Length: 149
Image (cartoon, rainbow, N blue to C red; front, side, top):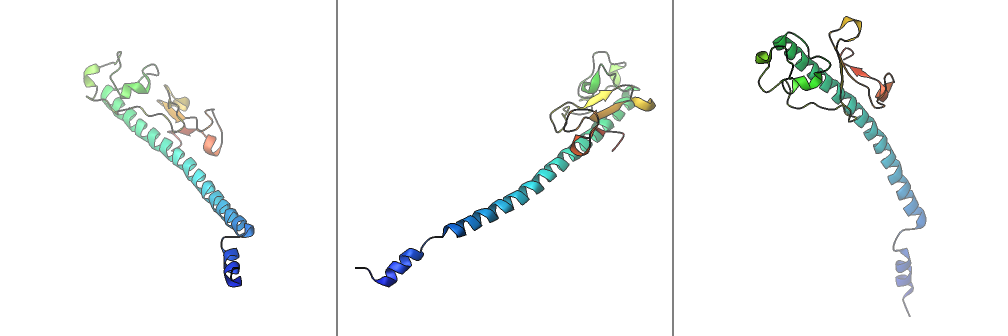
C-alpha cells in the first residue's frame, strides 16, 4: 500500500482547471492589446509610406520639368520618370538612367494617380486614394495628395 504522503503529493501535481483558465484569459487579454497596437502602427506606417512616395515622385517630376521644360503629359504618365518617353519633347535633355529606378505602387497595391493639368491651376496632381480606393474618405480611407503633405 502507498504511503498517504506520496498519494497527496501525486494529487498535487499539475494545475487545476481554474488556474489554466486564468492563464488562458491573461494570454488572450495581452494578445488583444498587442494586436490593437500593431494594427494602428501598420495603418500609420502605410500612410507614412504613401506620403514619402508622393514626395519622392514629386521631386522627380520637378527634376524632369527642370530638364525637359515641361511635366510629363498624362499620356506619358509617371513612367516618363523611369524611362524616356517615345514622344519626349527634347530627348537629348533626358537624364541618363531616368529620374527614379522603379515606379512604386501605393501601400495598398494600386498605382499612384497622376493628372495633368491639376485642379485649381496647379501644373499636376499626384495622389493616392487611400485604403478604400475611392475619392474622399477619412482616416485610413482619406486621399493623400502632394498638395496636402
